[in-house]
Length: 353
Image (tube, rainbow, N blue to C red; front, side, top):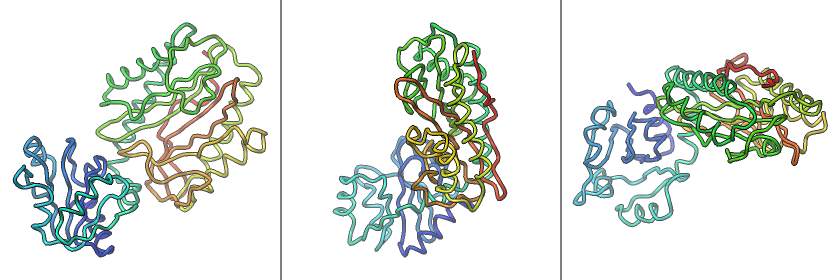
């Protein structure tokens, strides 16, 4: 039995819809196992359908266990297949479907009411099973190996761009299918940019270097950040680094099942604020990670979600001082009943290279 499908089926039945159509790539893969680029998952009260074109019929027959595979063609389009099901209410991914797609469905389906699925699938996906956690754990291990490797090549004279290329190549050589996002390599005053993707800036002696990267392993993402200093750290660099580390580790102790995203964020934010740097921590503490590198739940001042066991989230406070530099330290963790399991194993003490 596909427990992921059954959880989703139960939710849509409770919503009162006859079926739901899913084609956001991550949601489609989550429910069906399909890794291709085109296809529709349709779940009814009793049926699991996977609808795709000629290119993916063979692939979907192999990957989509427990699904009836239906080929759509120029003569039998997706709308025709849905009309054959005699639906009255169809759930759709309102956070993914475009306006033009919505209008097509509205126009070409026969007397079918389109019902937004809202956050139904994100909430189901937020709690991982053991297989998913193991895939994320492997992705985190590759990221840790990458950080160790990168520390061996960081030196004055290398560019941020070169470091970024080394990160991507090393992760792929060690089993990753790709990066989970465009790697952030920000040095010197550019380290005050929270999302400072790699530039052609040359890394210099005395620079902070913030490295935020992750990889994809069997579809699942990792995400970690470490900040190092090239050469000897100044007193102010040490001060900022130690404040962020204190906040990050305090949040780790706070993260457990039953805590809200707001509460976890507040633990780190209060420490940074008390030290006089509250205005320099402008993003949330963290986010969920899975098939997407940013997914539910959110850990932030607006984080209303309650953390539950086997959610995978990040803990990544930071301080970013314009025209000086910044520090972020990020671990990937699994929420447990009485705490959290830390997947990111790379050292967090201030590293001077």
